Length: 360
Image 1 (cartoon, rainbow, N blue to C red):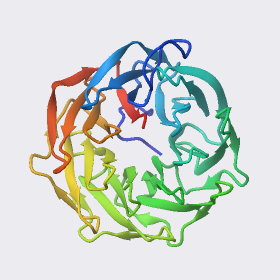
Image 2 (cartoon, rainbow, N blue to C red; image 1 turned 135 degrees about the vertical axis):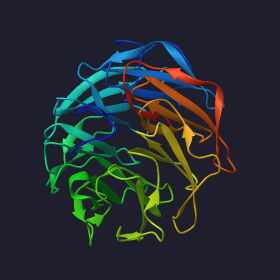
Image 3 (tube, rainbow, N blue to C red; image 1 turned 120 degrees about the vertical axis):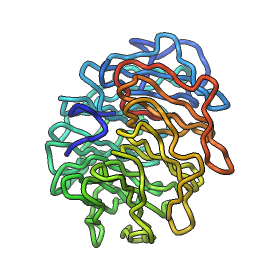
Image 4 (cartoon, rainbow, N blue to C red; image 1 turned 90 degrees about the vertical axis):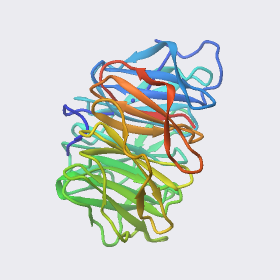
């Protein structure tokens, strides 16, 4: 499995007051964590009420090897990190006031070269896939320590490594974009154990090289970028079964090498980072899941944009530019979804930002 929105074989983000959590400060409810693959570190930014970013003092944490991907537990107590050349998940506790990270433990995975990671909205199950293993590993999460225990029956077979994973908001389904098979694989999630069962009809064809995958917050639609073409595939989700059906008009045109997707909380607007076009495409989503490009789209950003993320309130969009070592910041219109650059529209990061996430 490969991540095409990274120049190397690695990928994806975080932050800290170095070495230990603690110190005084405001609640960590409005923070942006950024993983820098070139610098092998994680950075943290404060998010203002208007969505603007400001850096924090002593806000980088060395990850040793380049970070690939990470997820935050929804209660904001733990961060789970994948790194290049490490077949494990690193667990960090998150300071409740500052958002600083403290290393807790690491858990060996049943995969070779882990690449994608996903967590359910309840923070009870974690899933990991890799480029070197043809499976998905599933774990239960200890509610107090954040520790991981392999689910009985894990790992679950795939025909090739998955480049991205996503759990539906309800926690009922897991979808995996398998680049080398040009398809999305779907699983039903056992609500008690976290175990996986293949969805009827899976896999679902998704172009030549599907990479990034996102599920609309209303759980009605799945969107998948095809990194080998200028296309994004749209599917509707059949309630109760998780079966995917192609949306009328799909696939839709995007820029060159689309690499990341963000969808607003109302499931009304969608944003795509176009890695080789150095821009971001913005769309409205209609009631059937079809996409229509917004006036003014695409929006120019830095070089090699690889990741997009929305602020907790949805009033700002952040774009990580891997080659420019910057983050572009945009205000988002609540009515139209259109983007306007902040007065300070570009924030510098360490080398090679590759993944982002916000505390909610």
